[in-house]
Length: 397
Image 1: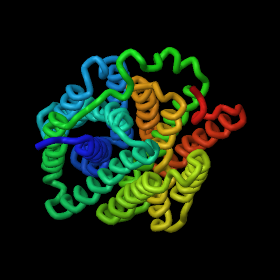
Image 2: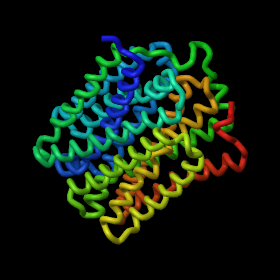
Image 3: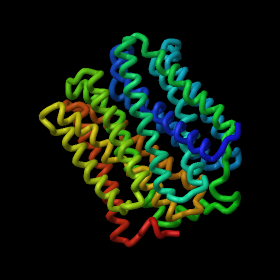
């Protein structure tokens, strides 16, 4: 069989679909971990922090070594780590002295693989032949949303059918996807984004104010997205007293659906709109959604606000990436890696902060989500500052 760049694109789509599993499967088990293993909210937040903290460390290493190792070998290695971590997730908690230690080890291995894959996918898609890179980037990131929705719906329904006692079978079953993609990446054609030796040096990027702005936006985007994404399931059950099946499907499930719709719509029709204005609208809507989720008197209204947050943040991450790629077309893999690092720092810090605040507050997760309003606010202030200083990311070179 002859593989084409279309097959490469499909492998990247599946890679981002699987990436959603690595980040969103564990929160669906949080209430089980609380009941079976006695793990506190702060410790659950620590698991999220460990996941994204590992990704940050691996991102730093990937910036330095991925181009040397090569896209193909890096992709194969990433899928091996991802599949191994998922399988250990369902095994180690029963073998280690403390279930939390077992979950932590599995999270580190899984996050290592997921991070390698995440650093690779955007530059691989950017390197493929064709125009409309903004649309291609949004379409790529939309598959994270479809993966998130898929893992939420399928896992929730299987827990309902099989019972929570058999939760440990599900991570092992989800490991099939990275195993399959391992064999795909062995065959598909790949090419470098920028010829070796012609990338803009990272040291030069850090000397440009617009690039610092992009990193701030990535931090805020990651925190805005993952804080609600990671805690909405537990918030629906404990904070809003909604049954788990309904809470997961209407909360994080609809969150993922709306995020996917937003990114797919931009992938199809984004060339008709001003991306910067769309990002401003996203930031304002995100603040409103967090606020309604916290203060709404009716649980269903609060749950729908959680879900609508998915639409509000849908363009933040891929939109910032697209603006930065326009500004620094020769940034290469190191630039994507650095941006991913700051996005993951936000993705790690936001959920951990919300969990830590919830643990010491009588208002529970409501207080954590209320404080998280700071992240879309930072995003808006970053965009406003760039306008005021006339730093146009799309025109910087």
